[in-house]
Image (cartoon, rainbow, N blue to C red; front, side):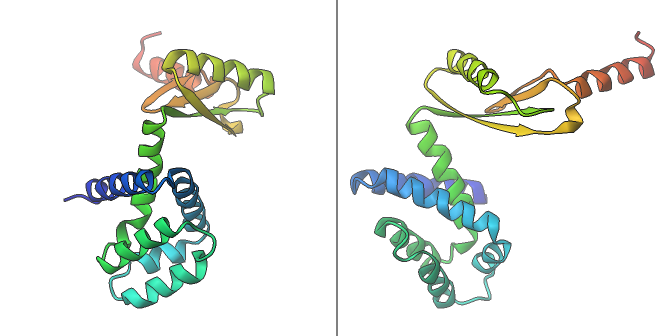
Length: 181
């Protein structure tokens, strides 16, 4: 069974449990905090994934880092995962939890990358267009990549709209190379 399949099943379980315990929002915040911690500390990911490190040491590390900062449901879940020898899928499970939470709450994640910082009016216009297209709540993340030269790249789920000048120049270069133009 693939890591993603295992993680998705565990994520579904923790969503169900957290709903039952009326702690869904707390657990979601905990998972986001956990993911930020993992992104900031690659060594923690390595420790959790390492089968040589004992379950007790992994539990001690997680307890030291997160006890008092996370909901008891989340901590109990981490303990269960470590004791089952699934520390290697905790990172993926946390990602899957956030993805499944978004689906449950009808939240769509969107990213717009532009050559310069977008004005609030432009962000609002893009956000409104995406909301109209997908319905439900949309969380828009704006990034800057000067190599785009101009325009933007909007990613919503597995769909992408690329209006960047860099992309257009690459297409033109390819067309010239093929003798189409």
